[in-house]
Image (cartoon, rainbow, N blue to C red):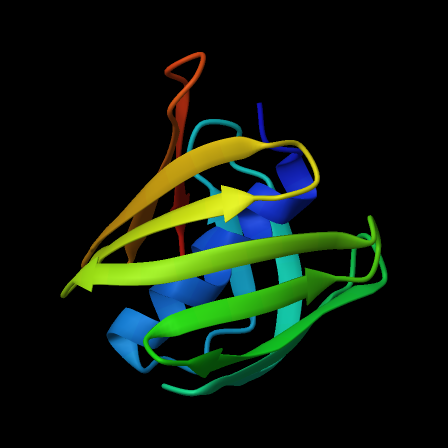
Length: 122
């Protein structure tokens, strides 16, 4: 299972990529918890700050693949956009594969194993 702060960061980043929003909050739809996040998300560069963990997620896209580094956990995450609104990725620190589907302002993050999913809203 992917660690919650990494999962939330991925939901925030993919949501911003797809919506071109400058949202500063992300909400866990199941719990209602709001987390402040800020920073830059473009088609080729990511540099965001999670105020809860006080950590950055930064990286860039090369050849269609984002290589992101999460400073709170010293974790590397690979993210690939497979089609508009859909992403696949690997949290290299945990070995966890995941997918993200963005619909409107909702990002659905799904772990391949154990098959868990969670929704986040920008």
